[in-house]
Length: 287
Image 1 (spheres, rainbow, N blue to C red):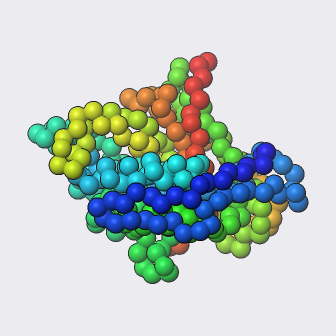
Image 2 (cartoon, one colour):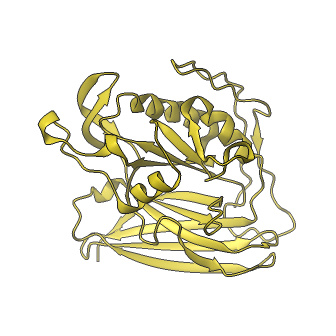
């Protein structure tokens, strides 16, 4: 991959009613070319997975949506967002005008496993806060949690691509991985299918918004919420992996041109920690 060098201007993010999130130095992100290995085109720098828990009937959740938009301007593609509609506020209620149902079994599993009880909330790289027992980060601390995770190196380089055959209604996902350091623990690989920019109702600070735009909505987790085995025990630096997956879209009404795929590499239960991830837009093909 060509040298990635991005300098992010020091920003003090806007203060919300729930408080301010001040991102501490360093404010710059510079990725140096690794001259010890052949340039394979893979992403070798750390990316952070932000699993946001939300719901259409959550009046405060748009605060989180706007926060993530602000943070995306700071962290760029180093921040990978998945919007998980789960819990009480995600249940549809046609009497109130909330007919869309964005819930998934895997989203509900994660919502329960990480004990999300107040919204908006996020789990950042599935990492426990300050070495404690809770994974859930309040909106006011998302920026600092992401910045903290970005300071941790990853042992995995990653590349992913995804294509949708509109004739067959089939999604194809290809993943290439390489250990860029020794990995002394097991790892799983998983992927999410997202649909972006869905127009559907949302409660926003007490106001019913009929044409709200929902971003990066989790639609499916074909390998489960925690993925499947990639490394059974350990792996040495230089070890490579390739994986291919297909997913049947024929029974869905999702907008094929707004689909995204997020691939994540995580430690298996009971650790859960994400060590690398990436997002790719789904290209359209027709055979």
